[in-house]
Image (tube, rainbow, N blue to C red; front, side, top):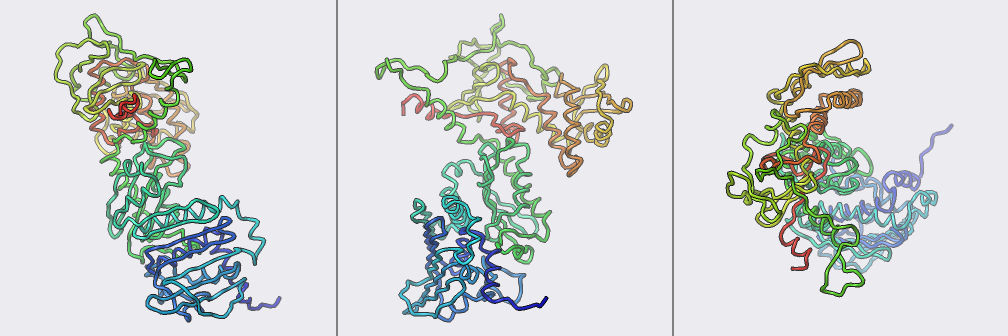
Length: 615
């Protein structure tokens, strides 16, 4: 076997297999070049999903004729010196243009700012034509036609034109978020025009252009530092989530990346706040010394390696959790709009009714509000819900709010009435609907609270505090509860017995295949002890094979909270409802339960008036 030198064209085609995977990859490389050239306006045009045509025009610094000749050669670049430790540009490899030219028909027309004439160079399947003078505006226009015509086997692996066009759109959106001072225009015969005007220093305005105006109202600003790393950007409210991770954007020193470490940190930060199968919306921007991050990991430059990945993960998780703790109890604005949309489809006149007559719900029968049964004394029914016994009463608040007025719902005023707490953010409890939802009146609207989801969150937060603070109060069982389990499950749980005891759950071995539960958390009241132990055993079996329970104790707290929270279908007294509202206002993350579902929906008076056609 004889070793021989490959031709330059074949070398470039091999490189193209790594750098240019699809039309979106070519678009990304060309847009990066335009940004590195100092462009403030970038226009992208496509046809056939970028396979037939991809044109990128910018108003950057432009190139001279001699620069064009070098630009289509491998490893020729103006962005790199003699080290990879100080990369401050998006591109630096010098591979994109020669790679594209080896598999497509490439033309580059450019005119340097201040020059009186431009120049053009054409490369088709690796064959370079002589440079020629050309009429050109200041800046550079790169046109790619018939992508992969020189390597037709590659065409078979491309997706439909619509899918390839969508991938280019996603590239443009990521670049637009990273550089809000640049105007982007994306057009073509295969799409509707997308225009993203520059927003200057208003980064949130640019993000709203891409993610929608709702993100502005449901975003929490991030601004945190740890050692030499800064984290900026915005994190969406936990109740503002999506069905996939496509709305998570990460940037490292301005470079859009799709790094698994960062995405994993986002998932960890939102643990216990997002429903299973749903994804938070977030835009994160990391700024650090280029020497502390390696962007030369993959030809696509979408992956990075941090010198201290643990520090970066800790910064992301800590900053997002602190932001959610600070403002995460806000209700998503999409809750009210979703409720209004749910009402509108069925709210229409019947065929036999004239306009202005009586209205009826066609999609579902009207169900009136229900009230908690009143006692002979005229107050709400005093029956305590499961898990809300004498010891568990403290789970709401140290000082329960007095009975509120309930006029307008057919409820009589209870004794010892004090002024209504309407001024509080979650207002004053007015009624309990279907023994599950609390209706509360605020100064400018009303709030509907899911009592089980809300109390579950409150109990969870107290459990979480016990992991790093004092032991939670427990209640001893008169007769220990014996739970039969496989021996291996008993072994796993006993390894973490000390951590469970910190949360008020005391267990010990009772023979080879059983555990004795002697104490349970006082705040949980009566509960299904065997069910809780078996569920914990299943979770420990899963986590011990991965990161270990010590890294997942919050999931244990969430499981215990779910078992001991106020159940749906339990009647609450008005002071209990008000106490729940007050503690929600004081508890971080009370806007969603441990499974990520919203705990309450807020309707402003203006929303209600729109519903009735008053606005």
